[in-house]
Amino acid sequence: MQLIQTCKRCLYPASHPLGLTLDEEGICSGCRIHEEKDSLDWDGRWKKLEDLVRPYRSIGGQTYDCIVPVTGGNDSYFIVHLVKEKLGLNPLLVTYNKYFNTSLGIWNLANLRIRFNCDILVQNVNPNSVKKITRTTLREFGSIYWPCLAGQTVFPVQTAVRYGVPLIIWGAHQGLEQVGMFSHEHEVEMTRRYRKDHDLMGKEADDLLSIFDTLTEDDVWQYRYPSDHDLDRVGVRGIYLGNYVRWDPKAQHEEMMRQHEYRTASFARTFDCYDHVDCFNFMDVHDRLKSYKHGFSKVTDHATREIRHGRLTRDDALALVRRYEHAPLQHTDKFCDWLGVNIRALNFMLDQHRNPRFWKQTDPGVWAFSPIEQGEAPYGDERVFSGGGFIANSQLADADQNKYITVGKGWP
Image 1 (cartoon, helix red, strand yellow):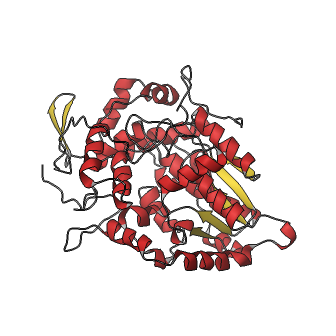
Image 2: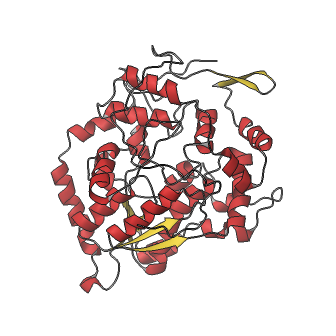
Image 3: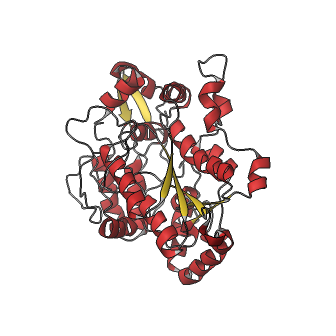
């Protein structure tokens, strides 16, 4: 297997699926763009954000000022904190029900809307259609999360058109944060093309329809992006707060834990306790698929981020990756029960998406992994690092929770 070149500062490989370049010093584009965080005038950029949102304030508070997509995890609390408490806007929160919900995520979402006193809309797509789409996207291009990503990125836009509220406010731009796809000063905004090419792996809803599959028009219509005519009529635009605020997920989550009781939990496959606590599958089956296809898993994203913020050395980050990246899955039984397949069928489908650049089958059912990064920290390194002091202040699930909470209002 050919060794893939890796950034000398962080742990990202040149084969990163979002596209990454290495300069003559061997430093990746993501690390170079991250350097802007220590040189930009963030006070000036905040003033620019205030000027940007001013025309969208409703007259007399008669309607919503903006749309804010949220979940029961990730950066939702910090985003709403900035929008409601710092910018003084009146947002309409929207969330897509991914159906893989943890009780902790349901609690966080309920607490979010109550603490910030916001209205919220929830999209519940027919679960039978979601399951059919999940079977198709798992089989065809190795994704159990396509419906989640499609729904989370289109429901806010559909709501903006439906309610005539043109401004959508997102958190950080993934392409900028991970691989330096843009500069903060480019002030990129939400686009249909980025959603299709990167979030949806090049597949729009209508691309899933085929005479060789069971999906129909009734299954996919809710995932369609609004027409250009409707977008132009309302003037829809989506901005990213990460272009105007020095984005630091660890510090932001800890501030929200102190101020607004955001709840966190530990995971088997990463040291980060703050992201994706609302979902059983993101850090489980979905994360394994990521490692099968791209040769690295979410812990590499977390470790790279902490290197860039100066909270981990490269060697310690690499040791953390080696410790967590192939940890056993914990929630496959829930996923198999939900999807209606057995574990052998699931493993067969997962194995079809192993990338031969990173995986070699040595015997039937036996695979050898060739790590991207040949660093000094060996496999089986038993050193224990805090990962910069991440704190789990709750549990991911109740001991008797054997199924997803498909719909839940939660409790504060």
